[in-house]
Image (cartoon, rainbow, N blue to C red; front, side, top):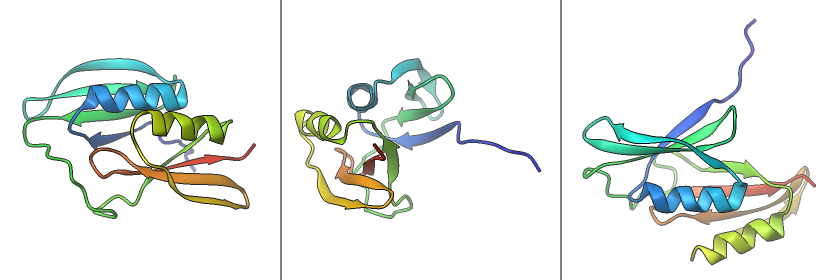
Length: 123
């Protein structure tokens, strides 16, 4: 049987630079690539050596997504949940759903486009 891992997710956002800045500050990621994309759009790839998020935008991307349509959330692990929450609030976003159950502590937030993210720490 083949083995694998998630290499990237491609999500549509209204402002890829703003979203990239959040992910850089939240996760310590770096920009891997930026350039033109399909449908006269543009993309910024932000991530680590083996995985990343492709942040896609174009004139047709309007944001205002509804929870669960079709994505429930994207989750990230961090080594310091309190520091991560501070970054989220510094970017003007509101953490919610704080919980502490096995296997870790977590909170959630919606970005400017209505995309839900979970941040969890197993430390």
